[in-house]
Length: 228
View 1 (cartoon, one colour):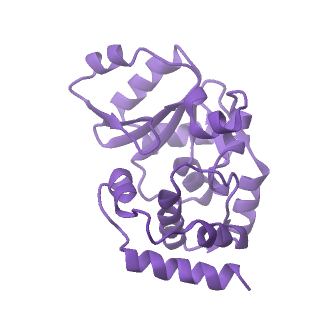
View 2 (cartoon, rainbow, N blue to C red; view 1 turned 90 degrees about the vertical axis):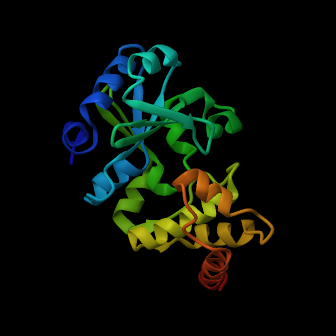
Protein backbone atom coordinates (compact mmCIF):
# COMPACT_ATOMS: atom_id res chain seq x y z
CA UNK A 1 0.00 0.00 0.00
CA UNK A 2 3.03 2.28 -0.39
CA UNK A 3 3.83 5.17 -2.72
CA UNK A 4 5.18 3.04 -5.58
CA UNK A 5 2.31 0.58 -5.29
CA UNK A 6 -0.18 3.43 -5.76
CA UNK A 7 1.58 4.51 -8.95
CA UNK A 8 1.31 0.96 -10.32
CA UNK A 9 -2.36 0.89 -9.30
CA UNK A 10 -3.02 4.06 -11.32
CA UNK A 11 -1.31 2.63 -14.38
CA UNK A 12 -2.89 -0.80 -14.18
CA UNK A 13 -6.44 -0.06 -13.01
CA UNK A 14 -7.34 3.59 -13.59
CA UNK A 15 -5.54 5.22 -16.51
CA UNK A 16 -5.98 4.38 -20.19
CA UNK A 17 -3.18 4.80 -22.79
CA UNK A 18 -4.42 8.15 -24.12
CA UNK A 19 -4.84 9.57 -20.61
CA UNK A 20 -1.35 8.35 -19.67
CA UNK A 21 0.11 10.06 -22.75
CA UNK A 22 -1.65 13.36 -21.97
CA UNK A 23 -0.61 13.14 -18.33
CA UNK A 24 2.99 12.57 -19.36
CA UNK A 25 2.95 15.75 -21.47
CA UNK A 26 1.51 17.77 -18.58
CA UNK A 27 4.06 16.34 -16.12
CA UNK A 28 6.87 17.46 -18.43
CA UNK A 29 5.85 21.08 -17.77
CA UNK A 30 4.52 21.12 -14.20
CA UNK A 31 4.01 19.05 -11.06
CA UNK A 32 0.79 17.05 -11.05
CA UNK A 33 -1.04 15.82 -7.94
CA UNK A 34 -3.73 13.15 -7.66
CA UNK A 35 -6.27 13.68 -4.88
CA UNK A 36 -9.71 12.74 -3.54
CA UNK A 37 -11.70 9.64 -4.46
CA UNK A 38 -9.16 7.51 -6.28
CA UNK A 39 -6.75 7.69 -3.31
CA UNK A 40 -9.50 7.11 -0.76
CA UNK A 41 -10.72 4.02 -2.61
CA UNK A 42 -7.17 2.74 -2.98
CA UNK A 43 -6.60 2.82 0.78
CA UNK A 44 -10.05 1.33 1.43
CA UNK A 45 -9.29 -1.36 -1.17
CA UNK A 46 -12.44 -0.54 -3.10
CA UNK A 47 -12.38 -1.40 -6.79
CA UNK A 48 -15.64 0.22 -7.93
CA UNK A 49 -15.93 3.17 -10.31
CA UNK A 50 -12.27 3.25 -11.32
CA UNK A 51 -12.88 5.57 -14.24
CA UNK A 52 -12.75 8.91 -12.39
CA UNK A 53 -9.67 10.81 -11.26
CA UNK A 54 -9.12 14.25 -9.69
CA UNK A 55 -5.94 16.15 -10.53
CA UNK A 56 -4.33 19.40 -9.42
CA UNK A 57 -1.52 20.94 -11.46
CA UNK A 58 1.01 23.32 -9.96
CA UNK A 59 1.19 25.70 -12.94
CA UNK A 60 -0.86 26.39 -16.05
CA UNK A 61 -0.12 24.42 -19.21
CA UNK A 62 -0.93 25.04 -22.88
CA UNK A 63 -4.35 23.40 -22.83
CA UNK A 64 -5.19 24.47 -26.36
CA UNK A 65 -2.18 22.63 -27.74
CA UNK A 66 -3.20 19.49 -25.86
CA UNK A 67 -6.84 19.79 -26.94
CA UNK A 68 -5.82 20.22 -30.58
CA UNK A 69 -3.47 17.24 -30.47
CA UNK A 70 -6.00 14.91 -28.85
CA UNK A 71 -9.20 16.47 -30.22
CA UNK A 72 -10.56 13.10 -31.41
CA UNK A 73 -10.06 11.45 -28.00
CA UNK A 74 -11.26 14.03 -25.46
CA UNK A 75 -14.27 16.15 -24.54
CA UNK A 76 -13.97 19.17 -22.22
CA UNK A 77 -16.34 21.27 -20.09
CA UNK A 78 -16.21 23.36 -16.92
CA UNK A 79 -16.75 21.38 -13.69
CA UNK A 80 -18.59 22.26 -10.45
CA UNK A 81 -15.76 24.29 -8.88
CA UNK A 82 -14.46 26.08 -11.97
CA UNK A 83 -11.88 23.55 -13.10
CA UNK A 84 -11.95 21.40 -16.22
CA UNK A 85 -13.86 18.15 -16.60
CA UNK A 86 -12.03 16.19 -19.30
CA UNK A 87 -13.48 12.98 -20.73
CA UNK A 88 -10.64 10.86 -22.17
CA UNK A 89 -12.26 7.81 -23.77
CA UNK A 90 -13.61 5.87 -20.75
CA UNK A 91 -11.85 8.02 -18.11
CA UNK A 92 -13.25 11.24 -16.59
CA UNK A 93 -10.62 13.61 -15.15
CA UNK A 94 -11.40 16.75 -13.14
CA UNK A 95 -8.44 19.13 -13.29
CA UNK A 96 -7.70 22.29 -11.29
CA UNK A 97 -4.72 24.65 -11.17
CA UNK A 98 -3.47 24.69 -7.58
CA UNK A 99 -3.30 28.45 -7.02
CA UNK A 100 -6.87 28.78 -8.32
CA UNK A 101 -8.43 26.19 -6.02
CA UNK A 102 -11.08 27.86 -3.92
CA UNK A 103 -9.74 26.78 -0.53
CA UNK A 104 -6.24 28.19 -1.07
CA UNK A 105 -7.57 31.47 -2.43
CA UNK A 106 -10.12 31.78 0.37
CA UNK A 107 -7.59 31.01 3.08
CA UNK A 108 -4.95 33.24 1.47
CA UNK A 109 -2.11 30.75 1.79
CA UNK A 110 0.68 29.60 -0.52
CA UNK A 111 -0.10 27.10 -3.25
CA UNK A 112 1.60 24.02 -1.79
CA UNK A 113 0.43 20.40 -1.48
CA UNK A 114 0.56 20.73 2.32
CA UNK A 115 -1.85 23.69 2.24
CA UNK A 116 -4.00 21.99 -0.39
CA UNK A 117 -4.81 19.07 1.90
CA UNK A 118 -5.51 21.45 4.79
CA UNK A 119 -8.33 23.00 2.75
CA UNK A 120 -10.10 19.74 1.87
CA UNK A 121 -13.74 19.67 2.96
CA UNK A 122 -13.95 15.96 3.81
CA UNK A 123 -11.37 14.21 5.97
CA UNK A 124 -11.03 11.48 3.34
CA UNK A 125 -9.84 14.09 0.82
CA UNK A 126 -6.98 15.32 3.01
CA UNK A 127 -4.29 13.51 1.04
CA UNK A 128 -2.57 14.07 -2.32
CA UNK A 129 -0.09 12.07 -4.35
CA UNK A 130 2.66 13.83 -6.30
CA UNK A 131 3.10 12.04 -9.61
CA UNK A 132 6.36 13.87 -10.32
CA UNK A 133 7.89 13.20 -6.90
CA UNK A 134 6.14 9.83 -6.45
CA UNK A 135 5.12 10.47 -2.84
CA UNK A 136 2.04 11.09 -0.69
CA UNK A 137 1.32 14.21 1.35
CA UNK A 138 -1.01 13.10 4.17
CA UNK A 139 -2.96 15.13 6.74
CA UNK A 140 -3.60 13.52 10.12
CA UNK A 141 -7.35 13.80 9.42
CA UNK A 142 -6.99 11.29 6.58
CA UNK A 143 -5.04 8.89 8.77
CA UNK A 144 -7.81 9.13 11.38
CA UNK A 145 -10.42 8.42 8.69
CA UNK A 146 -8.62 5.24 7.66
CA UNK A 147 -8.32 4.16 11.28
CA UNK A 148 -11.85 5.10 12.46
CA UNK A 149 -13.82 4.63 9.22
CA UNK A 150 -15.83 7.78 10.00
CA UNK A 151 -16.62 10.51 7.46
CA UNK A 152 -15.78 13.93 8.84
CA UNK A 153 -15.33 17.56 7.86
CA UNK A 154 -11.90 19.23 7.86
CA UNK A 155 -12.08 22.70 6.24
CA UNK A 156 -15.59 23.92 6.95
CA UNK A 157 -15.70 26.86 4.54
CA UNK A 158 -17.06 25.97 1.10
CA UNK A 159 -18.64 27.94 -1.77
CA UNK A 160 -21.09 25.17 -2.69
CA UNK A 161 -22.99 24.17 0.45
CA UNK A 162 -25.79 22.26 -1.34
CA UNK A 163 -23.23 20.07 -3.12
CA UNK A 164 -21.41 19.39 0.17
CA UNK A 165 -24.69 18.27 1.72
CA UNK A 166 -25.67 15.95 -1.15
CA UNK A 167 -22.09 14.63 -1.31
CA UNK A 168 -22.23 13.87 2.42
CA UNK A 169 -25.44 11.94 1.81
CA UNK A 170 -23.93 10.13 -1.17
CA UNK A 171 -20.77 9.03 0.64
CA UNK A 172 -22.73 8.07 3.75
CA UNK A 173 -24.68 5.61 1.59
CA UNK A 174 -21.88 4.64 -0.81
CA UNK A 175 -19.17 3.96 1.78
CA UNK A 176 -21.51 2.62 4.44
CA UNK A 177 -19.73 4.63 7.14
CA UNK A 178 -21.05 6.83 9.93
CA UNK A 179 -20.78 10.63 9.86
CA UNK A 180 -18.87 12.42 12.58
CA UNK A 181 -20.77 14.58 15.07
CA UNK A 182 -18.97 17.61 13.67
CA UNK A 183 -20.09 16.88 10.10
CA UNK A 184 -23.68 16.21 11.21
CA UNK A 185 -23.76 19.55 13.00
CA UNK A 186 -22.29 21.30 9.94
CA UNK A 187 -25.00 19.80 7.73
CA UNK A 188 -27.83 20.78 10.10
CA UNK A 189 -26.45 24.31 10.54
CA UNK A 190 -25.94 24.94 6.82
CA UNK A 191 -29.04 23.24 5.41
CA UNK A 192 -31.69 25.55 3.94
CA UNK A 193 -34.96 24.41 2.44
CA UNK A 194 -34.68 27.32 -0.02
CA UNK A 195 -31.41 26.13 -1.60
CA UNK A 196 -31.37 24.45 -5.00
CA UNK A 197 -30.19 20.86 -4.54
CA UNK A 198 -31.00 19.64 -8.06
CA UNK A 199 -28.63 21.91 -10.02
CA UNK A 200 -25.42 20.87 -8.21
CA UNK A 201 -26.36 17.21 -8.62
CA UNK A 202 -26.92 17.67 -12.35
CA UNK A 203 -23.59 19.50 -12.71
CA UNK A 204 -21.74 16.93 -10.60
CA UNK A 205 -23.29 13.63 -11.70
CA UNK A 206 -25.40 14.48 -14.73
CA UNK A 207 -28.55 13.35 -12.89
CA UNK A 208 -30.54 14.02 -9.72
CA UNK A 209 -29.83 11.21 -7.28
CA UNK A 210 -31.67 12.63 -4.26
CA UNK A 211 -35.02 14.39 -4.10
CA UNK A 212 -35.79 17.24 -1.70
CA UNK A 213 -37.63 14.73 0.48
CA UNK A 214 -34.59 12.42 0.54
CA UNK A 215 -32.36 15.31 1.58
CA UNK A 216 -34.75 16.53 4.28
CA UNK A 217 -34.90 13.02 5.77
CA UNK A 218 -31.10 12.84 5.70
CA UNK A 219 -30.78 16.21 7.44
CA UNK A 220 -33.30 15.06 10.06
CA UNK A 221 -31.15 12.00 10.70
CA UNK A 222 -28.10 14.25 11.07
CA UNK A 223 -30.04 16.41 13.53
CA UNK A 224 -30.76 13.35 15.70
CA UNK A 225 -27.12 12.28 15.46
CA UNK A 226 -25.51 15.69 15.91
CA UNK A 227 -27.69 17.46 18.44
CA UNK A 228 -28.02 15.31 21.54
